[in-house]
Image 1 (cartoon, rainbow, N blue to C red):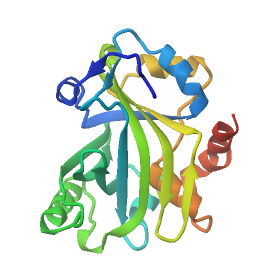
Image 2 (image 1 turned 30 degrees about the vertical axis):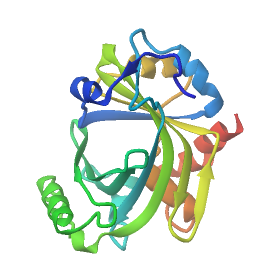
Image 3 (image 1 turned 180 degrees about the vertical axis):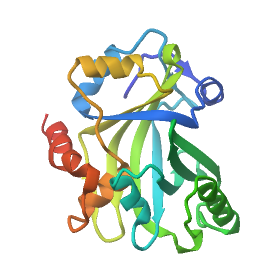
Length: 248
């Protein structure tokens, strides 16, 4: 189990000290075998999220996009204004949220509302998506959004108090679009979520020769399942970074 010996932090306290709905995300791809070394290098005071005695949690995300994959194309072409709409379910608690992620000059912005599992885009959901995207200058009709990709994985979340940041570690990543499926066992997606300045973990990884990777569970996953799609900014991730991490 990841972080078995670390002191714990509860969800309410983590939300209070590192909510980070607006943040800069830096992602890294590591072989799962490298995680003990990463944990050993954590800065003093790091704590692990613990809820009801559990320290690792199951996430299931359903990504929605237009029939012509507008969200995929905007992200892959590195457009300044882009978006992601997903229904996220925390499998352990049954809690579900409808989330919209956008970007502005200061980084990633995530907004969300509670959502029913069966109806992520009911009337309230459509209004929420429309208002959020309109606020960011994106004209997307939520009525045309359809389910495109289902992802699942196990996540461990840590608090880095010196940086007022979060560190997430995702393993056992599985992808399914209803017709094709793929698993990336042995791969760890490590992500720092902080302000504009890099965290102690970022600097440790850089010193170790590990650089940020262009990975999006939605974008990279969809490109991996559909070689006929342009892989856009995820080409190196798919052809080099993921194979290298899995082979290590």
